[in-house]
Amino acid sequence: MKVEEFDYELPEELIAQKPAPVRDESRLMCLNKETGEIKEAIFKEIIEFLEPGDLLIRNNSRVIPARLYGEKVPAGTEIEFLLLHEREEDIWEVLVRPGKRVKKGNIVKFGAGKLTAEIIDYTDFGGRIVEFKYDGNFEEILQELGEMPLPPYINRKLEEPERYQTVYASKKGSAAAPTAGLHFTPELLNAIKEKGIKIASVTLHVGLGTFRPVHTEDIEEHEMHAEYYEIAPEVAEMIKDTKKAGKRVIAIGTTVTRTLESAATDRNKIEASRGWTDIFIYPDYEFKIIDALITNFHLPKSTLIMMISAFAGKEKIMKAYQVAVEKGYRFFSLGDAMYIY
Image (cartoon, rainbow, N blue to C red):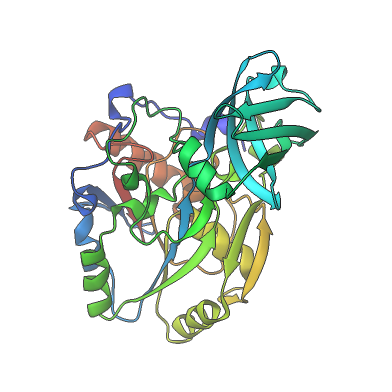
């Protein structure tokens, strides 16, 4: 299957540069994956599509201030780091720009030397392995020197950086937000619980695997970068109980989908686990756990649009995206939402 099959035309003005004024008042396109029928709603009306006994699963990962700006020592060349994940204490995998100027053995300093990094190795994906050195607490220094790593298609800083975090974000570790969850408010979550819908959390720290572009012509040749995930025993039991009761497991986002499908042992079966997943979901994949999916509108030719095409069918997804463009939906991380059921 060719990457070009997942391309579509998107006017630049439809790329959302800021979130909706109120989280749960973004637009919501509801797509029936069996019939292709499309309904339009406001996000807080998602509750009308959920049924008592359903299980809603969210990703509780929190975005860290993972973008650092420094200079190479002694040349003074400006260098940008994007922290992807901590391999062991003070040893991180990072993306570097400009990468050609940063080689093994180089030193980069940040904040006038408050934080330094030595390049100790290369990664298979063009990144670097670095060792940070500092005095004090790394998290506090990162909070002081780092910035929220907004995607490159967002050309302005957020007035409220917390709008790039979900209201339930708790476990620090992501380089980008699990954006489907940005639409939920505490009030909406409470209303969902009061209706008899269960809510559980898993963790997947968003890294390079989620947003790395597909550079191969054939999608089968693309390799995903591994990301760390956790599913607690009680969550695995909730999923099993939901399936036994004939109710639905609904994923809030593609990161939750990857997490659950990575831990699936068979159709409707899952075990508690933690580790690294490089699962790549594209058409003809047979889903084992999720029954419905809440997501945003994704970039052309991305692994994410391939995943939702696997879930709903490529033709239905591309048609829905055409409708979304025609009706002026807002796209990508800070844009509107889609519910596929």
